[in-house]
Image (cartoon, rainbow, N blue to C red; front, side, top):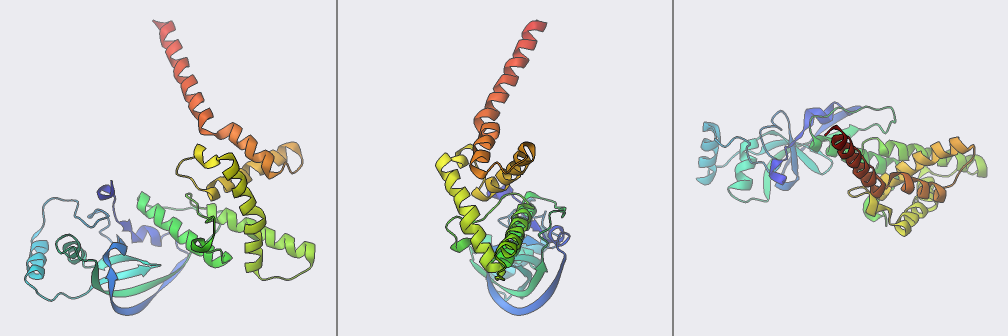
Length: 283
């Protein structure tokens, strides 16, 4: 449930950034629903900003009484990362504004965080919560869009993944595609051309085949791009095994035969049957 989720821990996000710099942008009314994290107090509140402890301390009650009495409060202070916010100071004010006043906006002193995210296959991540992992994935997606110009909100089939480092694998493939194109044609093109050519000639045909085979039905909560990454890896190993490029169509059918959910369930059921047989023999 939503109320069981924690806020994103900014320090955990920060550890995974190559570098970032801060830019004060003044005081603005920000959307409370876009506050996703905290500096230092991510574990004290649920994602909906309700305190995890049932008891409210004296400071909370004092602030609540003042706000209910019409006392003017200073703006909270936040970091802005992409279109989301992390509370630096003012956790109680946000909580009271949201849960006592049902407010949609709150005044905040905003400091923009401009970051650099590596799309590197050798990159390792550290994070404290699943919410932090999801936010790091969002940063990876933003870096991928900026480098490739493939903006998901305008694509017919978004290039969205659910695993960290998958964007690095896709970016490396596009870079290789770009290098091969220039080598074969002797034509210097902008990287944006190569990105969209890759999308048109490799990703879209693969997605169309996935749709024909209903592959996503076998892998709930996964995306076309997830399957594309997995199938390309499977294609590499099959091609190495056979000593030739086995092709995407063959790989899809081999991948489905080996890894679809039906086979996984069959393996589980067979395992259970084997355990039952062993128990019966012991009895």
